[in-house]
Length: 105
Image 1 (cartoon, rainbow, N blue to C red):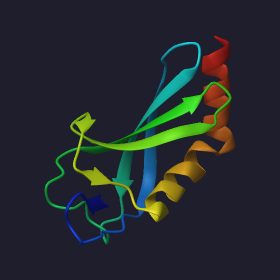
Image 2 (cartoon, rainbow, N blue to C red):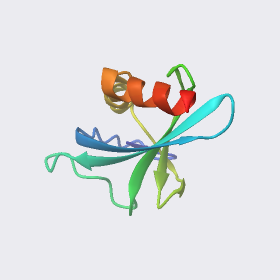
Image 3 (cartoon, rainbow, N blue to C red):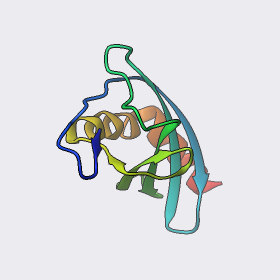
């Protein structure tokens, strides 16, 4: 995690993801991800309830990955490694199937 205005970078390793998918409109699917973080890489001080909002197209292509704290924008951003962990999870067959099923229904 990178806090705006700070030079300190914390690399989180996500152990598990808990997704909640929601069809926003005829273009976007919102995925709220709750992450279980490896104890060796604790969440930085200043974050109370870290989640990620992943915005995808109906075909499962990621448009944006946004960190949230208590459901709101926060002063942190994900590192490229953290984004890659999230991207790999969203691009997994299981989640792509869930996105496709949500978009059909």
